[in-house]
View (tube, rainbow, N blue to C red):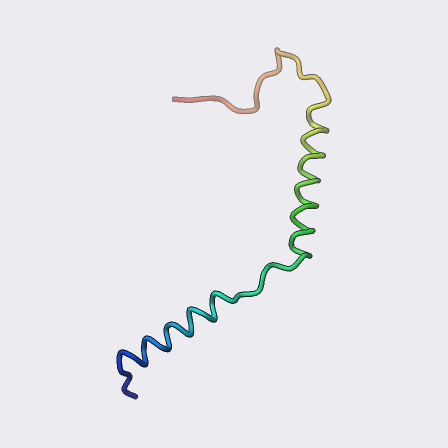
Length: 64
């Protein structure tokens, strides 16, 4: 099969136009993202409640 530059350009333009018309993410994905963010914020709030004494050492060490 032999393609001219004009036919190749037409095929590429039509393929690019088809790719540009991709469907938008569904609302279910948006709902999942919102639920995950809400869980993350709730967990962060729960971890911020108990006071941590200054004498508490971290569970890791900095080594050079």
